[in-house]
Image 1 (cartoon, rainbow, N blue to C red):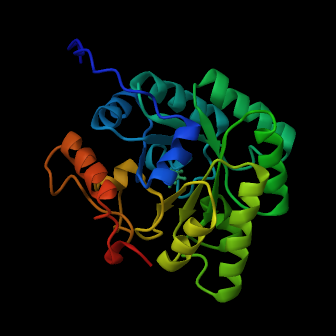
Image 2: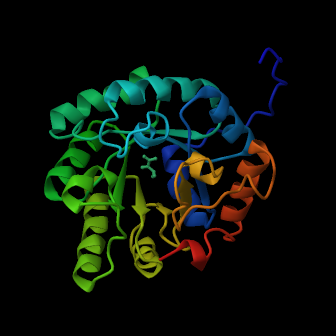
Length: 275
Ligand code: KIV
């Protein structure tokens, strides 16, 4: 705890336009969640590109059954801690449930993420008209936005559970249209969660912004996992798209490095982790 950190070689921080450049150059984007400074430092040292302070903290930190109870104050608190652990990775913060129900509310909460907590980008879920309006409102005011389609955990009450999305033809067409719409509204990146690999590939090829997949197959521009899933410490049965990298490496640092290597080499996810 009191060890003095050796000076790390200076590396250029990952920027929002840098993500799009990575897509153009075919470099796979690596991302994981973090909720505290020490873990963020481990990820950063291993060379992760993006760190998300997700509303998944409502589940993995606070122990709730869904992400809905996570509050703006919670994300700001954890995001500020994570910020202190990072020097290179881009820091993304989730806007939690109902915190972007109106454009004005979204702007106030995005200001807290960017100004108070030091994030470089906010993420919000959905591609319906009211969300597109929010994306437009934020991006016109210089707030970089990452959209999120597919399984959007904040819709759990309406969806009645966490399920793979976009299996049927109509749902696939709507998701492709929404992907184009979030780009048109100004989104700089798109998370695709729990969608068939073939649909994620089609969306990835169709839009100019990077896609970051979770349970979306190997052909997205990047991959993200909840870090606790990647370490096999999430309670309950392992979900199909996760993998325990700790068990095969024996250390947290090793697990994070293996995840990054496997994602960059497109060795993860395999069909076994995809739909
Ligand atoms: O909240 C979160 O951690 C997320 C990731 C699963 C993408 O949204």
